[in-house]
Image (cartoon, rainbow, N blue to C red):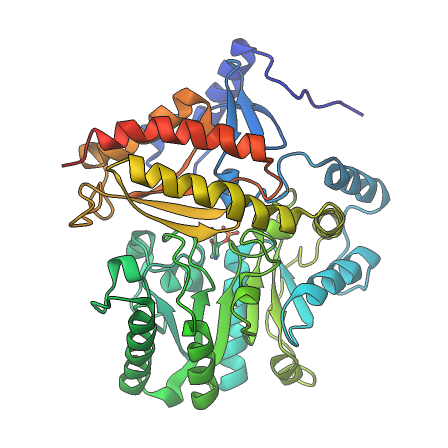
Length: 456
Ligand SMILES: Cc1ncc(COP(=O)(O)O)c(C=O)c1O
């Protein structure tokens, strides 16, 4: 068995070869291929990864907010190796021990009666199938989703998405209608407090439903706590209000927990903070920290019953893949045994939250701090009074220089940040230690001077 190095060992020649083959043959996501310069990565362990030049980065992005259990957790690595030796693959039509056990472990943790699990290879496919289930269950076609959302890059999922990545793929005929979810700091409703924001956001949703025609609406999909769009924790009562509206109109309520689920917010699911049970819940990322691609939909008893005698018209060759399921079992068990969800909650409450609030006071560029667990956003502004974002919406090139300067300063300091539009998200692994969190926060603090330089 090969042993992973746990520290950087520079090998620039190997790095150059990796880079050359990448540039020759790899077509990267979301990118103009001629304008990117991907960093060649040599290894990863726990909260860190490193390049071939000997630079080590504290991973405050969890890659794409998926390595909740950190890099190379030994129990998960061992489970994949054991399963590979036993049975690498088997078609989804068979019952197999790892698929059964992974489904049981997920169902045991999902709220309410979400006890049947349809496995996918990732988040977008989970969303795609949740929407399909809702449409078939209701016999209706329209789906409502929030501006300020991300739901994935496949056909339905990208049309549900509320950020500019939708625009080039928006057919305007995908049966999706967008609405505004609550976000007090940049309130679409001119609200002055959370209670007002909640009440007005619910009224806006009801109005949207009334004008779109309730009898044609299959589902409302929301990220329980929107992730990529800015980590906006909904005000008390909002999700319960959406649940009530859905019940009143016979609309399926889908909560997308692809990013917020599996410990990130300090609970197994973000829905646990609000005491709300959706009809369908989508998950991926943290279910096995992405060690092997896996996602899924947790399905309520009522929706599952729709497909008791009638076939569900959807499937994937790798649905419930044994290597992915084995890694999910090991991940969930390790998270439970090692108190990893509790660690995320405690680090958020005792270390990250207080430190970020202090940082906000020192830096003119930090407009708002929001989040919980290991799921935080800093809203960067030109001016704290006007709240003008540090860079315009969807900025690129020179207009995005302030955020580029900030990100470069983080990397120079040894921190890999998550940056989106005018925000940086503090999203380390749920396993992050107090000293690692403090190390990262100190680098972030210093790097924010680069953002401050662009304030009014
Ligand atoms: C909330 C949410 N839903 C869906 C997705 C799509 O997941 P995937 O990239 O695994 O398809 C993401 C990815 O970031 C996400 O954050």
